[in-house]
Amino acid sequence: MTYIDLNYQPRESDLLVWFRAEPPAGKDMKYVADRIAEESSIGTWTDLKTLLPEIWEKLRARVYEIDEKNKYVKIAYPLHLFEIKNMPAILASVAGNVFGMKSVEALRVLDIRFPKELIQGYLGPKYGVQGVREMTKVYDRPFLGTIIKPKIGLPAKMHAEVAYEAWVGGLDIVKDDENLASQEFNRFEERLALTLEKKDIAEEETGEKKIYLVNITAPYKEMIRRAELVQDSGNEFVMIDVFISGFSAVQSYREEGFKMAIHAHRAMHAAITRNPEHGINMLTLAKVYRLLGVDNLHIGTAVGKMEGSAKEVSEIREEIQLENVPANESRFEQKWYEIKPVLAVASGGLHPGHVPAVVDILGKDIVIQAGGGVHGHPEGTRAGAKAMREALEAKMQGIPLEEYAKEHKELREALEKFLH
Image 1 (cartoon, one colour):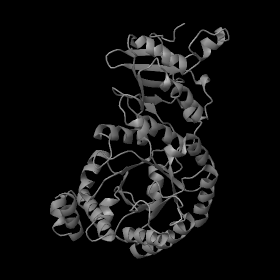
Image 2 (cartoon, one colour):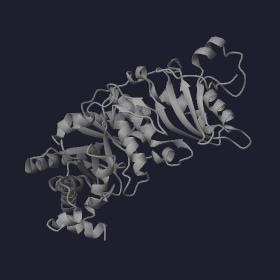
Image 3 (tube, helix red, strand yellow):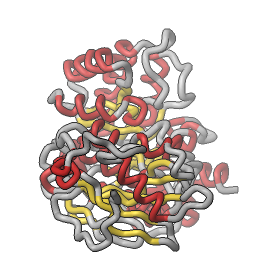
């Protein structure tokens, strides 16, 4: 019995997966393609008396394309194989045991094409790009944000003061770092209350809407308790470390019906995305998170300290923001129907000198976040925030940073530190 059917034309209702596979020594691509399709649908390592003909016909995966040169395998899965509204179970099938098989030397998921019937089973973002813009009244430029630094260690009162300095300096967004939870030196409840007090003051002083991304990542019951506190406080956003929390937690949280938008930090993603020969790429994860319903998603920077080429990061941005994503040499065409676009987040080693390049690569529907690039300014956080805002003003006006810096002290000092 073989799962290879190179004459098969995938149906619109099929879920498609694009793999890159490395056969073990002495085996070819047909062998490894058969093993992947077998293990990820209805087969196992031996013949089964219980595999009835009607099951075989209805539920088997079909390998419909093999590219020997690039070591690509494309597989179509009938939607009947899955519980549609159960993303953890779907991924357990198509991206589960297959990674541990001896019959595959290395394996990487390059893309998943979700069919319309499956997409309609998910909520997608509550707000998305347009909703966040309406919330903040920021329509014609990227958002600017920072992450409180050091990552952990500041008491709640100092944390709130640093947030205030960033907001009044000109930033739109202040974010907890991914590993700031509710440690003894900075309890969640106190941090939330004190930071929101400073947020109100900053909004009154600047006349601008400010956003606080408070990290609620925790075991699920505690995460929900913290979300309830955030909702009761009137804050508009929560932050979740989505990969660490798990697909089930993200899907379930979105279905709880909270009013807050979800800022999705991707901490730990590189454990499975970074090796180009094995794992699941970030493009695929980004599609899953758009479906599950995050409003903001970290996608990389193409500059700064995080791994990821400009092409890769740009394609991820397209995948989470376009309504219809065109196919290319390494991804499927994907139609998103009524699923809203996600606001992309560029974060990791950024400073004012990076702003023009980030905008050139990723466009305006992004959040540009700088942690050390703000708080590491020679004159401190407020000056660092001003430098970021000045860098964005220069870019939006088409003025080179070095020229704009001649009349803007904070930007000049930032460039002198970070670029020279």
